[in-house]
Amino acid sequence: MFGIKRKKTDVFEVVAPIDGVCVPITAVNDDVFAKKMMGDGFAIIPGPDTNQAVAPISGKIIALPESKHAIGIANEDYGISVLVHIGLDTVSMAGQGFTTFVALNQHVDAGTPLLTYDAQLFASKGLDMTTMVVFTDGYTGEVPLSSKADSHVNAGDPILKQA
View 1 (cartoon, rainbow, N blue to C red):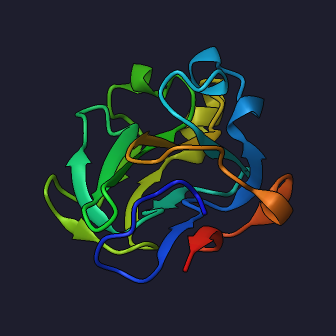
View 2 (cartoon, rainbow, N blue to C red):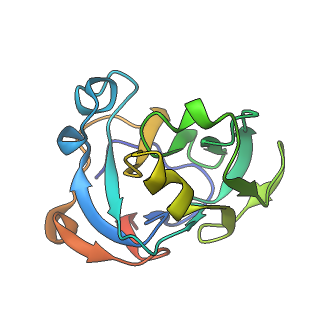
């Protein structure tokens, strides 16, 4: 259904990593994401009180840069990897304002807290905290948001699901 290859598990699910309004990745105010140069996906525009991100899929942490602004997760059952990218230009903060709760090679379940961020600090710097979930490997085709597009979602709410 989503262009993914089933391996061991029965259901592949992607959940919202943060609270906010779910939008197509093409609506992101950054050409690298909006033009899908890193891959297809979706984004969530957080409210001003949002400050925590959770794992959108179950899998192993495969990327966690020192800047803490992005986390890569690989689901080995499906051969799918995602990048959770917190905000635009937040790499410029060099890790300041982020607190992570995971480590490289750690297994996480969808909905596991990944990090918190200081929303007031980022707002004071004028940074856009739109958070992207980008399929970086193993996923082909469009990302069908259907009823979730332009709707408020809570962290952990299902966005994509394949039985």
